[in-house]
Image (spheres, rainbow, N blue to C red):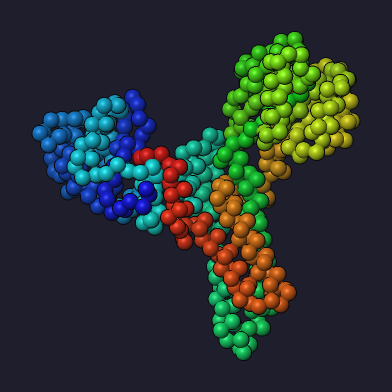
Length: 462
Ligand SMILES: Nc1nc2c(ncn2[C@@H]2O[C@H](COP(=O)(O)OP(=O)(O)OP(=O)(O)O)[C@@H](O)[C@H]2O)c(=O)[nH]1
Ligand SMILES: [Mg+2]
């Protein structure tokens, strides 16, 4: 699908379909200006192909019969100074559903073909304007749901990941070259030299890769978001806490135990992380079929959420149901114990919580006390401790993470081969495999399959 002819001139609606102020229809390819000549009449006279690059021109989109379709501005960006590095023409028309569809149809009748999802960005990559990690970052920038996620996406878009990886790759290439020379000429002195210096060089590369892998603890939640379930016995204030974190009355709160039956889910921003908060039904011995289902559902979320806020009523002593929840979740690292109702006299045995979970946070959902600290602790649980110092570029894609882990394994194997005095050919092969992984992050060695997977996620027109 994605390996269609890259020399075609493509066109697509780049803004979202539907009624809006302006719609932009983008054309890219060697025939883009020729098509524009056929469908656009500038008010000032002159053909679009004769207008200067990087200019915006007022005029009309017209059919072959001379019938006007819409009033528009025509943007011209001639190759190679364009998004795709090809000739790009953008028609800014009125954002009506029919008008943009008619213009697109007119372009298709005049020699364009409809662009595939992500095909403009794919061309920017194939034409060497950006590397593959930057192309993927376009999607992260478009899909960013918080400011922090946007900053991380922009850092990748600016080539931050390549800047980290390229020096590492260059060192590995140097080592490989030396090693291959030594394998070909084993009698030379160089042979001993490279086998001696290689483990330290590999160690450095492994450290660099491990550093990047560590950053994924922040990068992946920032790009994918995280789920946080609020769990606990009935009446501990779970729904009140959901409302307090959302800063609006989303869940029903009453003094009656068992108020929440079904889960209530809402998206919010916690310390820059796009978080889905889930208010669950209180865990208790179910009295009827609906309660049984509600408790089952709560338990499922308790097991599957990225982080769990285990809520306790600070104004009461811990009950048997609290204690069984503590036992059940005692081994899970993503659980944060929260003692609610800190505005009341403390009666809950917080020593047990500290002993079991290492720490707890006291809050009052009702009075809005300590919620800032709670948000920080939630972020800490999602980030599993936070990013390593000095990390500005976060690994935010599972594809990158997987390739880095693979590269790390191969480099460790190569280092072991040297230390164990095994044949250097084995080490060379491992270094090549590690390099192949690093290369496919940047798309230096890409296969049709990788491309298909990446660009298939894009929207049409991007
Ligand atoms: N004093 C005090 N009362 C609170 C606080 N948070 C919640 N409450 C009260 O505790 C009661 C239960 O609150 P909910 O938020 O409905 O509790 P819940 O855990 O969702 O209860 P279920 O849905 O029944 O499981 C209500 O009367 C709240 O007003 C708090 O911080 N301080
Ligand atoms: Mg509730």
